[in-house]
Amino acid sequence: MATYPFFPFYPADWISSPRIMCSTLAEQGAYIRLLSVCWLSGTCSIPDDDKKIATLSGLPEQELTFVRSMFTKHPTIEHALTNERLLLEWVKAQRISDSRSQAGKKSGKSRRTSVHHLIEQNKNKNRTLVGISQSQSQSQSELIKEEEKKGSAEGNIPAVAVKPPKRKVLRSICDDDKPNDKHFAYGQRLGVDVGPQWGQFVNYCLAHDKRYADFNAAFRNWLTNAPKFQGGQRHAMR
Image 1: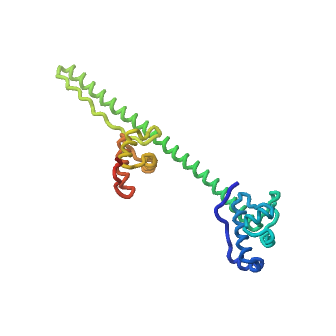
Image 2 (image 1 turned 30 degrees about the vertical axis):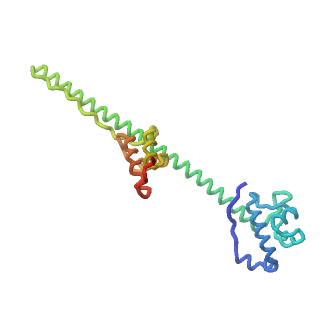
Image 3 (image 1 turned 45 degrees about the vertical axis):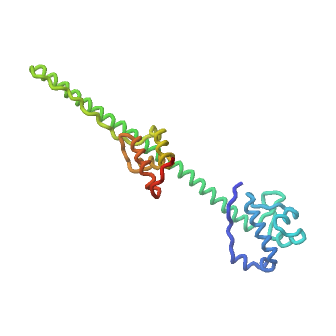
């Protein structure tokens, strides 16, 4: 069962209670101690046994009249006691915890879906960019061949075919991009933890739609600058 680190305490209710004001300080301390044990039990209960109550409270068995009067039979657990007000607060805390847990699961699922959607979009963009680059290279090659044919037909000295420079294609980051052994070795020399840095690098690229021709080089530059963003240059690990 779930446990919660704290429970609500209302000083005005405590001071204004005639039963509390008529009890001794020892009885009040024992009562608070038993409330704490009850709250942390996982079921909001204490055992219905005078010897165990005496051990838990620190009072002798013959002095348990007051603290026993502050507890009643637990509604769902046999041979157990609970405090009615504390049980209401415990049920309320349980509902709040369950609600936050469900909200967290929905939020995490939404974030994972969003990141996956961005990665798929980037993959499609990369395919489009590669197709355009290949089409442009093919058009240039066909143009050169056509000029060579014209020169040969007219008896002119054919121009030397110049291979067009290979263009670097900028692309977005995708699932296939990963840090390699060189990155881990470089990060060790800089004193930088590569794993978290890679996660930050991926989030940065996705959030700002960053495109690089070489993600290995881009991440190496990121690692080079990482110590500056962590509060100053770190000494290289020896």
